Image: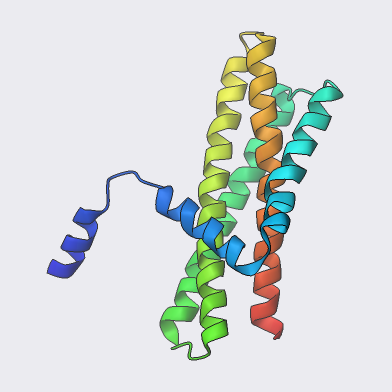
Amino acid sequence: MVTEQKYISKIPLINVDIIIVKHFETLLEDSSKFCFYLYFVIIPLASAIFLLLLQKTLAADSANTLITAFSIFTGLLLNVILIIFAIVDRREVKDADRKTLFEHLYANSIYALLFSTLLLLFLILLVVLNDWKNLTVVVFFSFIIYFGVVHFIMTLLMIFKRLFVLVFE
């Protein structure tokens, strides 16, 4: 218990930097920088800009639907993280590639959980601020949410691919 206390005391109360850094390290380990930027920056950015150029800002009904969806994703990701933890904890993974894949999957799932939680916060803020009828605020939050949703989908697809590889290969 003493070592656990020492470890916990070294971590600042709220610091998610380590989660984000580890997630991006796993992405850059597994792919080229071009693919990383294409899938996780350029495609989400282009999608958000395209939707805003079409003058598609998020309405309160759409935001509420996304809040429901991301609430479900948050719960599902929490279960995936616990399942991965239980699998790794239950048996010793001896294959180095498989162990690395488990670690990457774990880091990516925790990042997706964090990201979906942040998206939920932005969606709730959008619903609250949508009543102000301030177009600049709505456009700003719509951009962030559009970017975030596409980025989240790309991250989720990568998690699915890694789960598939773990199960079938």
